[in-house]
Length: 183
Image (tube, rainbow, N blue to C red; front, side, top):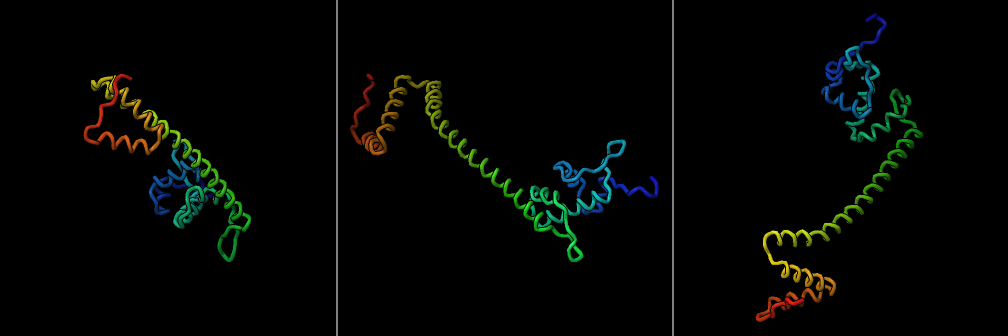
């Protein structure tokens, strides 16, 4: 390496310098936040620009920004202001718009998932009696008795809650008649 070449650090050395684990650096690379160079042997090599970018990521994360927020912020340049660096109003608006768009897309996905969940729950409710019937048949219960119970349950459901309540009271009343099995 010549004297003019920038110093390149290995994952271990870069992590030590930044005060993080090597896995943290690899994770941010996997998320596409940093793209370090590679040696001929395919080892990651970090230069000063990579370290600055990591420093920026770590500062934003320590302030509580999500990785999605950090990703949007890294797309925008910082401006020199009062000896420090800040985002311009335009950059802040672009970051806000990008994050608002992501939130809106997630809201749409959540609503679609709620509809799908509702449909799945309805289907599960419809399948449960079928499964119960088959399990009881496999356990040796009489098919005619089970089918009669299903017919009665379906009739009670169609009649509404008041009929169900009355039928339940009739069934527990002393001397209640046996259901007609000839149907």
